[in-house]
Amino acid sequence: MRIALIGAGRIGKVHAQAIHSHPEVTLAAVADFDPSAAQALAKQYNSRAVEADDIFADDTIDAVLIASSTPTHADYLERAARSGKAILCEKPIALDLARTRDALQVLSEHPVTCALGFNRRHDPQFTALKEAITEGRIGALETLTIISRDPSPPPAEYVGASGGLFRDMMIHDLDMARWLLDEPIESIFAVGSCVIDPAIGEAGDVDTAMVTLTTASGKLCQISNSRRACYGYDQRIEAFGSDGMVQAQNESDTRLRFTGTSGQTEEKPKWFFLERYAQAYRLEIDDFVTAWKERRGPLAGAQDGLEALRLAEAAERSMREGRKILLDA
Image (cartoon, rainbow, N blue to C red; front, side, top):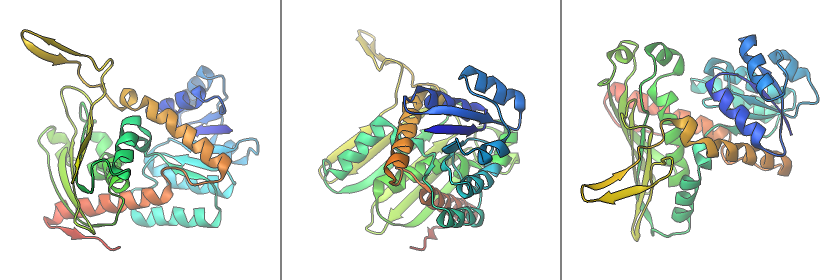
């Protein structure tokens, strides 16, 4: 499979490494609004820097990985679909539901393999947790707790373009909740505050938030987000059921624990998503390639992106209006 990468920034570099590590994939081209960034990344992986227009016109390119800035995602996705290329698009497709639905309409008119970058579904720990739930190891799932905390807050200027905490950060956790609960979510209640960086509040966002989801059968899920954890990237999940509990813990470099006369000590968690989810990004590429070859749906697709965004918008509305939001089926 020959993949062209659009976006040579931080996340683009992660995807370039994942593409390069896959034995069945070639990084065919790199495009970025900054030509020097595209040239540097292309050179690193023995590829070529091109304009985005060249990618869609090149019949030798099988797929497009969209890792550019969020406002460009939907346009690039539609152009890739119309040119018959498979797509792996970073989340979100767009920052509002109407634009996202327009993009999905184009996909329905030009059906191609389209995966969405919910990389956490590919994490080995989270995959094992999902399997434990599905196989009934904890009995009937009753509550789900998801904790996601960044090591440090983003610059305030990033907040405006990102769509805010619910669309930019919690959207991953909302997708995980949908995937693990595996039944319709009927309501959402959210609270948020700005207790870390006043500049984020001045930009119109929150840096700390909690959400409670309730499913059709009464299962409860709580999601806790913070833009700052002084000890590193805090990524934990607990699934509690009628017959037991299963937990996914933080990853550290060696996962060693020392026990001595003064007590127990462990390493801090890996610092950020680049380190924590490196393997998940590689497995995401593998699933994308396999889905394309087998003409099956990927583990996370465009519809999942729409549904996670729908929850993110409802969470923001709940916080703003101070009430529980009922969701349409």
